[in-house]
Image (tube, rainbow, N blue to C red; front, side, top):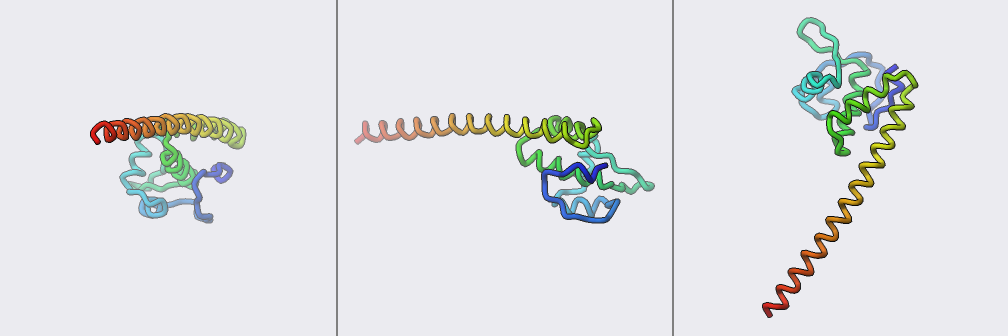
Length: 136
């Protein structure tokens, strides 16, 4: 099931079915504490073998989604919603569709913000030029 959930971050192929905390944190370049935090937030759900956490392929894919979502500026609540959409039983179609919509909306918002920032930069430069000219 989780193998059909294509992560948005590149994850190296593996035949392994389970992963330890050191292995998973090393692969993604994050701390074990970060993995435990994602577990506390309900984003991943490793099994337990005594006190040892055992991460599944599903957890591994979800970590990839979490990290990519964070890199794109999504909050953990938004990431959780996108992750949960995989479980609606349509092979990830809803997850992909909603993710596309959210990414496009975020890109549009950032484009608007970038235009606003460029306008502000232009105004600052013009104001500085006027101040310099007045002092000359």
